[in-house]
Length: 452
Image (cartoon, rainbow, N blue to C red; front, side, top):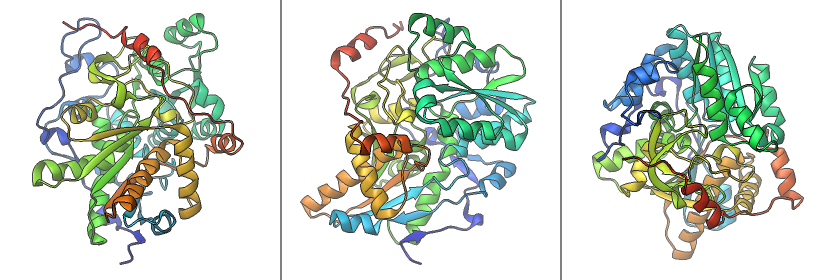
C-alpha cells in the first residue's frame, strides 16, 4: 500500500468509542450544580440532555458501543483518509515524516459531524423534537443542522456574532439544512438581551452563545441542548478519528512519535489524541500528545485550573478545567472555533497530570503555516486546523535542526472553503497578531467563582 494516502474499508469503521476515563490515573472531579455548588446528578441534566448521553457523560467502561444507525451514517464519509505530507516534508527539507488525518471530507466539512450524528440520534430516540446549540466558527452549527435534518429534528443555532459576520456562508449552510440561525448575543433570550444592554457592539463569545442556547432549551419541553465540544460524551464520540488513524498508521508500517491537534474546547484534539494516549497509559508507549491553541485565547497555557462556569450567564454546571474566566472576552480572531474561555475537563486533567503538552501560537504564524500547507498539499485548511499545522511544522523544523527523523501526526480537522475572507485579510495585510495582555487576563481571572 502507498503511504501517500492510506485508506480503510467501511468494515474498518470503529464499532465502539474509546472512553479514556477507564485508563486515566486521575479522573476529573464531578461537575457542580450552579446554584447549590453540590455535585451534579442525572436529575440536574435531564432538562436539557437525553438519558443515554448523560450515561455516557459519567461512563467508566473503556469501550462504548456505537449504535448501528449512527455507524451507517458515518459511512457517508468514514473512514476518513490519512495522508503522508511528502511535498510539505520536501519544502521544509526535514528528516521528519509528517502524516495528517483529514476530517474535512465529512459532508459538514469538519470533524464535528462525528458527535452531531449520535447526539441527534439519542435525542430522537428520547422523543425530543428540537435542539438548540451555539457555534463559534460555524462548523459545529453546520454539523448539527445537518444531523438534525437526517433525523427530522428542528434546529436553532446561536452563532457568535463576529463569526456570523466573518463567515456568512457557514450560516447559509445551516439554513440549507433547515436551521434557524441567530447572531449572538441576540435579542431572543434574557442572556442575550442583558449582554446587548451592557455592550450593544459586543462581538459575542462561545460563553455568551452557550448561555443563550441553554436558556432556549430549558424554556421548552420539546427542546434539548447540544454541545459540540468540552463535555465527556463529545470527547468519546470523536475517538473514531484516532482509532482509524492508529489502524492506518499500522498499514503504513509506521507509528507517531508526536500527535498534534488544535484545541479550543478539546473535541478534535481528544478525538485524535486519546486513542494514542490509551497506548501510553496501557502499553507504556511514549507518544508526545500536543494541544495547540491561539495566543489570543491561551486557555491551557495561561489559564487557571479551577471550577468555572461553561457560559457567561452562569447557567451551566461548574466544570473543573483550565479557564480564563467566564467573563473573558476573546479578541475577534479568525479561528472562531478556538475562542472559548475554558477547556474540556478531560483534556484539562490530562494536562494537569503532565500526560499531554500545550502550546500557544500567534495568528500570523498560523496563516503562514496554512499557506505553506495549502501550496504543498492542495488543501485549504480552516484557521482552527492551521494551529495544528503550525505545531507540526515547528516540530518538523526542530527535527531538521537536530537531525532527528521523528514521525509526526496531526489532525486536519476541517477545510477552509468558507474561511476565505480570513485568507483575503491575511494576504492583504489586514490580519495582525494579538497576544493577550496580562492585565486583561488578570481582570477576568479576578471574577472566578470561589468554591469552598
